[in-house]
Image (tube, rainbow, N blue to C red):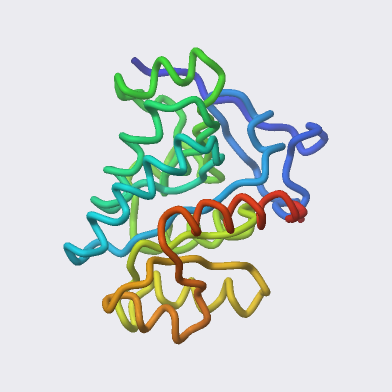
Amino acid sequence: MPLEASIIPADHPNFPPILHGETLWAIGDPGILSHHLLALFCSVKCPGEAIVRTYDLARALRDAGIPIIGGFHSPMEQECLDFLLRGKQPVVIFPARGIQGMRIPVAWREPLREGRLLVMSPFPANYRRPTATLAERRNRLIGSLAGAAFVAFAEVGGKTSRLCAELLAQGKAVYTHELDSTRALITLGAHPASEAELVRRIAATLSLSERG
């Protein structure tokens, strides 16, 4: 089911000022960008203790109606997306490729019809496949659009860990689980907490955040 992607004009009321100069293509309602969004990140490999806790948190974020943005490329991110699409909260999917002529998965169609899913990308049509370089750029853009970030797990010295360090240096709140496997993230400055406390703190942070 290919859907036509349209350009979000720079004078659109919901065009993110922080992305001024970018060309943004979208499938879905750009009005979702008016929400304060939580970025969701996880390295490709995720330890079992973090997987279980992230399942619980994804359900809790969904039930709390927290708007989420992510690339949803790593296995853990994809699992979270499955949970989130069953909820009612807004979701922004940001592929690391062009979305013009993109085939829309069955699970995305109802959320798109309901106006609670936005698929967006700054990459033109000739960028047909994700690459590591595109993913890094995409993740930085996600971080810039989000009011806060949750990181399920970041491999020490990996790209997700470096991204977290950049977000923290920018003064952005980064949250994670309180686990042995997230100690390196916590040392960087990420805020650890239990699931219920994470949801409460994330909701409070997003309510105070301002989009750039």
